[in-house]
Structure formats: structure tokens, C-alpha cells
Image 1 (tube, rainbow over the protein chains, first blue to last red):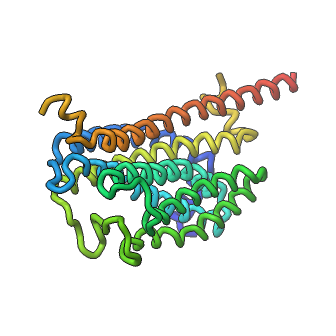
Image 2 (image 1 turned 90 degrees about the vertical axis):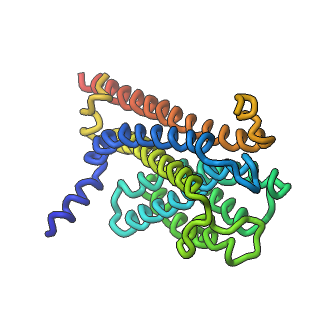
Image 3 (image 1 turned 180 degrees about the vertical axis):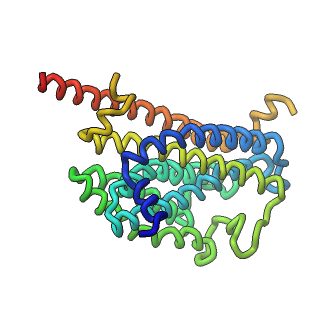
Length: 249
Length: 57
């Protein structure tokens, strides 16, 4: 058998992944704090005032990264869900579960900051427009996944049911992404698109990217920290958990 | 730019700080909740181990 294949499966064992995640959490925490710190400084002191929206546009530096993360996290969850259904590895379900609350938070933040941006610029907190509605559905998918997981006692069955729900819901992601093209919406088009590149100034673009990278690091740190707790909960009866230094107090 | 001017955000104070404030709040709360969750799980496992050790004796 291919040696690389063996290595991957080795890390899919909770007992090997737990200490690895433990070493990665501080690294990504430092990265997140550093990047978001720099990103916030750039958001308020480096990025220039917008000629049309004044200082109000600065919401973009938290709104767009949060919206991106809400979609990325869902795609990563779908990846883990598919992996779990195909290979039946325990860790996949735990990773899916560990990412969901953070995804829900970012979906909520995308909607919240969007409302706080829409009010001064469009004159309304909310419209039933394609982009906003599909993002709201994304938030409901996260919450639905968490509710479904919580409702099934058998963790293996909960993982399979959750994975199925996540995979069915993945159809919503391209709908969110293309909603501004497919429908006539109040929401502006993509700020950075795969076809046209960027429509913003260089400083604004960099600020947004630094914030987005900071949100990525935050997500990785938080998801790994959460998966460690989930591993402990689910493997509580195993010998390797009872031999951990942090348990023997 | 004065401090008051900075916090006024050109009249968009409510919207800018409402967005950044709630985002910061949630992104600080989530790690704190995770830390508490981890503590609770570790305590629970330690208790189970103590009970098991007690049964053996």
C-alpha cells in the first residue's frame, strides 16, 4: 500500500489528531490575533475614506470576510461530511460538528453587519432579496444541522444524518454566490470576482484580504479547539484519554 | 482627526460600531465558551476515572 495513504488514515484517528490539533491551536491563535489586529488598524487608520459612502463603507472590512467565511466553512463541512460518508471515519463527523457553530456565527455576522450597512445606504435593515434570503437560508442550514445533531443520541447516526443534510444544503452555496448575477437584487455585485478581478482600490483590497486571512486563522484555531473537546467527549471511555496528562489531575 | 471625530465615523457611528462591535463580541465570546466547555469535559472525565478507580479497590 502507498505510504502516503497510511499516513492520512493515521491522522484520521482521534487519538493521533488530538495532540496534533493541540499543537496547532496556539499557532493559529497567534496568527488570528496578529492578522485581525493589523487588519483593524488598516480598516480604521490606513484605508482612505470612500468618496461615495464616507466612513460608512468601513463595514465592508468585517462584512465581506464574515460572508466569505460563512460560505467557505460550509464547503469545508461538506468536504468532511462527504469524506465521513465514503470512508466512515470517526474524525470526519467530529470535524463537521466542530465547524458548524463557527459557520453559524459568521453567517449571522454577515447578515447583521449587512443590515447595519443596508440601513444607512439603502434605507432599510432588510429586504427579501436573493442574496440576503439565500444567506439567511445558509444560517438556517447551520442551525438545522446543529439541531439535528443534538436530537440524535447515537453519535454515529447523528453524524451520518448531519452529513446528509450538509451535502444536500451545499446547493445553496452557488446560489448565494451567483444570486447577484442571476437575479436583479439590491445587493451590489461581487467586490472581487473570479472573472473580473477587483473593483476596489488597492489599500481597501489589502485591508479586506488581511481581515479575511485573520478570520481564516480564527476559524481554524476555534474549530481545532472545539474538535479537541468533541474528541474528549466521544472517546471519554478509552484508555488513551484516561492516560492524558490534562485528565490526570 | 480628533478622537471624537474618529468615534463619530462621519455620522455613521451607530452602523460602523454596531457592525464591528457585535463581530468583536461574538469572536471573543466563542473562544471563552470553548475554554469553559473544555474545562467541563476534562472535569467530567476526571470524575469518571476516579469513580472507576474507586470500584476497582
